[in-house]
Image (cartoon, rainbow, N blue to C red; front, top):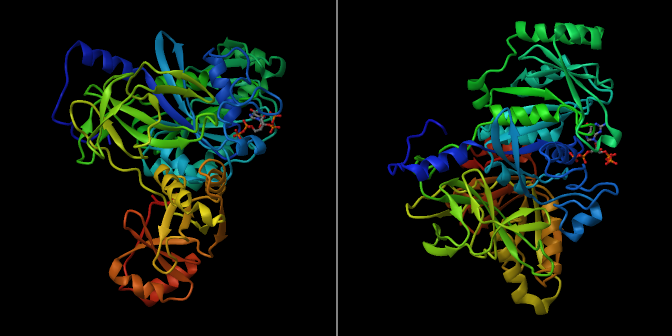
Length: 545
Ligand code: G4P
């Protein structure tokens, strides 16, 4: 990405310098993790440390804490989970550097939806959060593949070190061996998992000792020791940390910027988000090492540098956040230039003007009017009915960013309206869900317009679609699952032939792409073996590399 040539329209002068400075202080990232690794707790801890809130618990309310900002849907409240994404922005200053952190929240549910992929198109870095006792888990792995596919640099955080867990060197080996990412620990735990005393800062050789606070509700006090003082304070635990750190050094596991940016190595830290241990260090590493926004590559392969006139792309559209207003928010990531509320932009897909009177920053349920934004920021555009995920907005100098790939669905269900008098609402509702990217919608002549097929990466998408059709779009539906698990793109001339196979079916997406669905990978492979002339192409899947 960074190597692409710049677009021809370079911008210079004081305005460009200001944009450049604002872009350089942005850090836009997401946390990827398996559910329960501590993402919500870490988010709270990060914000606590940046001193936006004074007590942990004001953002994500679990178990009696205040209501979480991202739990907006009734369904989410009922389940106590967070399906939607929010963008959290907070200032953070460290070592004389004033930064703005944009933390994009990804769905926390075990089910895996396209939303998460889309959010990852809008970040410059990801924090891979791992439970110290569990190591790499399935969802972490899938999300990691997406990051690697997109070359998103990853910072690895081993969390819950205050609880019994695995050996730290064993975790390093697991990450290296299973996913080929080379951890380069920046901190190393002093005290085994379950007895977290502090960390060895491997770059300075000093010891950072943490002290617990009541309920982990405030930032944990830190004391810094030189190696001598560390030995006195932590004894054998210190010696062991030093020894293991030397083993890492001998193994070449020291930080390396080039390979980090190429997603081949990953700076690693140890935390207890619940106790606020190691969270300061993570923030400092984000500021110091995570890349700021850089040139976004357009469809022609030119990188539009942050100093160029305003441009952004929509990475997510979300409806129904405010049950009183039934509105729809499009989240756009700013790629270049500066944004001021009220700006009239151009919607690249239609060439029409787009007025941004209703720009907001969305902090969970709280919305504040957004007056300006810089590269790396996320703008929430309310009432943005014309905008779809992947759409580009620009000012002055036209640009089109590549579409966001739709990921390979693995779950398929036929949708039918349960109230025949709501025929029109049914059609309109399905169109809307499709435009927002809630589910992909497939059709065939055989099934007819009344029985479109919903295709999803994770079944939770079906629940969201059913819920919204009933409550918001006034067209209740029932879903009948289909026995397919694999989709491949098929050429129109082969469609009839594939359709005649047992356990296979061809359906067409609204964009005209024909998808051949197969019951299992095994069936697909058998078909390909028997019919090598039929070309079947993969969609982007979580595991693609
Ligand atoms: P998620 O968003 O990734 O799903 O995880 P979440 O933060 O909700 O954390 C899952 C559980 O793990 C929570 O416990 C949380 O308190 C706990 N947890 C998170 N980080 C740490 C940590 O560093 N150390 C320890 N010991 N626990 C941690 P819970 O019992 O589900 O909820 P709660 O009653 O504790 O809030």
